[in-house]
Image 1 (tube, helix red, strand yellow):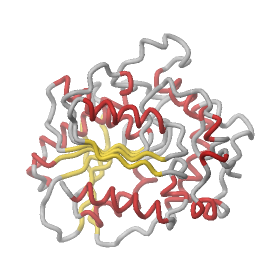
Image 2 (cartoon, rainbow, N blue to C red):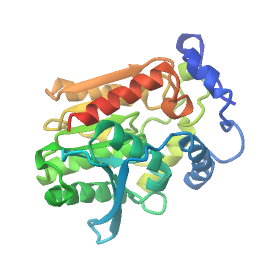
Image 3 (cartoon, rainbow, N blue to C red):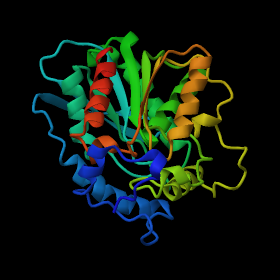
Image 4 (tube, rainbow, N blue to C red):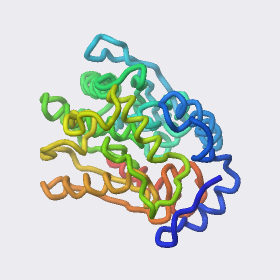
Length: 323
């Protein structure tokens, strides 16, 4: 059952009504929130049920590709293209799941929606997950996908100058890390990045009483996920996390592409995302920031018909359509 936040930060009424029909796990039940594999086992059936409600458009062509990561591992890529639509740019997309769960198959309906509604091809990346593959696997996989997309832009029918990257939750954190990595390696120039409810900071592990007892992603989940990604308990060496792993740790955020930043007002990762957006703006990066009050993490999946969810989807698609 969803546990509503305190009086200062109440749920959006439409989201509250929708949550009554969603079988959310109780955050106090069992050990599922204490280790990465337990979180994966709890999250993936829920996400599968939520994504099954997303109506997948029929007019999308799908093709399979692959890139080589830094260690030679093949990274599966899936391209979604609106049938009969003229060539445009390309959005490289990293799925959510806290860097420990999720996958391209799970996100397939949403990728079809983005490609069909925006008219811009979407390249979904099957990056490796922790704990089996801790940092830097996911970030290197994402960077390899970006490099592959740039090298194959012509054959994909994409304009090299209009390649963007996007992701949600842990995938958004990997996007931000890969963009920093590409800047420092002199990688492809990107037209933009979309960070949707991004997970950016391994130091976000203390419960905020104003958020109440969260539902789909808790501070305990965050702690366990970061421990899996970093390959160590997150309380060890708190000052030595690589900025490509946790982009909030980056000392320099200059030189990054125009950024779309979506933040849920009742989200565990709210404050780190707000701080990151402010830092980008201070160094001159164009930032389009949307803060949705009364919305918990993954609100667009939990309550897709709510007005706030509809606005969020329209804004994302508008941003994608610019490439």
